[in-house]
Length: 205
Image (cartoon, rainbow, N blue to C red; front, side):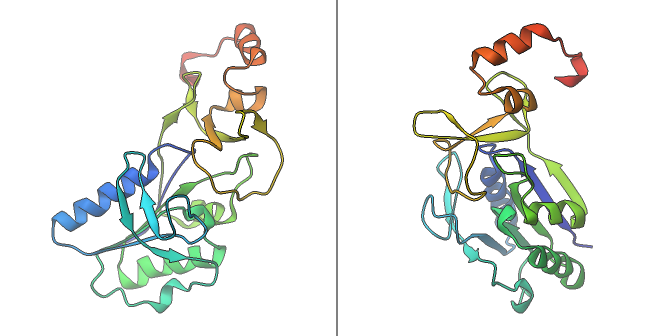
């Protein structure tokens, strides 16, 4: 039985690379896949899924008006969706229904939270509806697991305020651990002082 999957991570963690690898695995077995990405994401061109390894594929796009249930998926073995944080709650429900009523696995990749640590509505709904949820792990500059991300300006300084959605890659966002998220940037003197004041148990690293 097909189900809804959600693969989430901080920025720049290789989510698109994993998506493209799954697509390749299906197609190498002669099975058709359908790729979607958010229409708002134009970093590499609209309708492009691009990995950090510079592998790129064309994809269909979704915006808040798209109804995923209006399409025929008769010959599709899997639906793969990038930038899933931009889904609406209704669209998450559509994808959940699609997986269970048409027996098409739906695998979504995206961010869990924004640069302020607030959940994206689409991600919050994916966390509640997906039957299979997995974190794609990456590391902070300090060496700990990155679970958050921060927005930075052109000079590399942290940006604390602004709209939730601002399209950008490594030049605008940095993956950080919880400590670096709260104390400051990974290379800040404040972080170094805080690290010297507390020793975490091995299980916390």
